[in-house]
Length: 371
Image 1 (cartoon, helix red, strand yellow):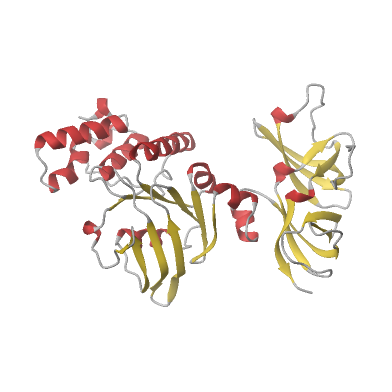
Image 2 (tube, rainbow, N blue to C red):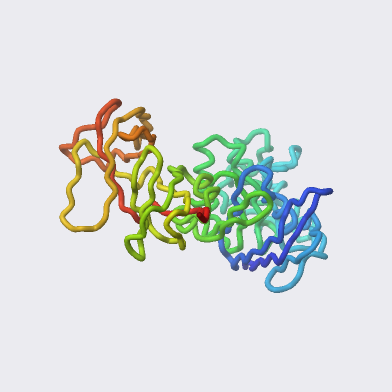
């Protein structure tokens, strides 16, 4: 199989007076695993349906390998779609479900047998070939759906929340299978989801959508570590989002922000700001270190240090989520991996007094309100 490069140019879509998609521009590379991530109603499924030909654009263009496909009907596009409800034929066996699109193409029985056999092996369902859909688990049904979608050798596979109907463990297993399958078949996967953990765990690139617009595009690392605004910061993972005023610009790289109840914090200066500006700062809970004793540092590298008390501790198995009430009364979320405890370190518990510290590079500005 060979993947296709998808270009979305200035696409707008209305449903009546509702502007569903607003000047969407995207470049999806050949053979990559690309995710479109956003909350319900943001327009991501509509965008997928436009690529599939199931919805028409009101303006703009969609190109596959440089050629416009907006005027092609769905069955003429080298694109197949996987839906969350599987869409299997209940009266057909696994084998016949996968063979169905091949029979429509009038392939010979020997060609169908060879192709279906290869696909059954690919999705590890050889022993289930004679079963009907009602005899399969949710994960197995989705694998049949995947095999059938790949039968016609599409250049692009569209996946619309394909694992949302599965329980958490099965979702994780199928995500790993999807990633492995993508590596094996070598075509372009475009994956739509509202689940940020799914998107950042398997994607080469991610487009984050909100209210019909793409608000950030980048690698999973870029999206998580450098969110473009407060929406992305809070939608992708968890964060401490703090509002304060710029009181000092001590260097080219750092800015001092004063927060109500929290005091003065040194933050990374990744946006142009002036003294007096009001800013929103994000700080991921796992970036904050927590200890019983006040930390000491040999060099003069700036470090933020706060004292507080454990207001709440939630044990999660692999980590504990702490809610720390600082001396000023501000609540900060701090997530500590249990593997990060030193051998002789005392476990931090509810009501303990603690010190928090973090690198200023990890607290950075996502939005600025000019003074």
